[in-house]
Length: 174
Length: 157
Image 1 (cartoon, chains in turn green, cyan):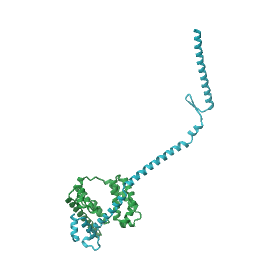
Image 2 (cartoon, chains in turn brown, blue):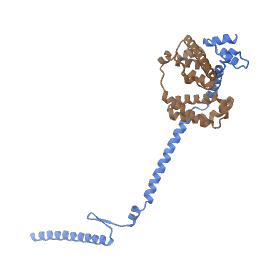
Image 3 (cartoon, rainbow over the protein chains, first blue to last red):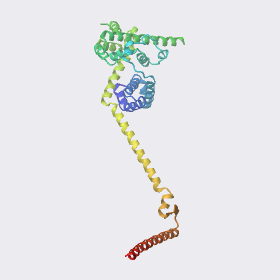
Image 4 (tube, chains in turn purple, red):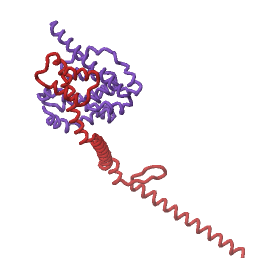
């Protein structure tokens, strides 16, 4: 599936998914986030979905589940909490190591980064903002952006390699 | 700059967007050095996510979500309106065509006499005539009284 085929699937599906997400989260911004999450997951697993007959049904179920998760785990992160980086040294839960495909594992590692690191990483590596633009938009120094970006990238690398080593170890053990 | 130096710079958070693009392109190659192969998935993921995010941005800009929300509200209010009309119609039909009371009442004549509901025509007629007699007797009393007043006045004169 290339990006044009992907767009052809997403364009008609999106309004329906937004409607479902909005009914559950009752929040337009949350619905947009959930639907974007669903769409990105489909893209990362596009080879699998090329064989799947009813993509719409799968997406609907995924949207419902992610919307419910969103409502359950929703918490508002204040700027202070964001700057504290309070979960910086928490180990990655074992369940994240058990992910079968690399994309899902990497996604989970990114989602588990401390809030400030996650935000800086997403803005720079995924959305393509310049360092000084991130600093201005978040109200922090360029040096702070670089530090958090460096920590985020290293953490992603280390946890991903750790996960691979664990998986390899499990395989060799059998 | 070789790929290892670029990679170190990347992990220190010091690469520019252009250098990061070059790095992703390097990791997209088939003949990647062995020690870098285990990082390939990370850079492939980042490149993939960037492509998808760009596509989703295009889609979102072309069709804002508010359209769907408005449409849904309209659909809801329309359904509500139809339900109200349907309920009102059913109630109206029930009163119009319900058997018994209303139709039978229309063909049946009755009168309330001294707190009693009487539907027998003869009985009603009898009471009516009796009432009219009472009226005529009341008129007679009035005429008699007026006459006696006049007679008294004449006598005094």
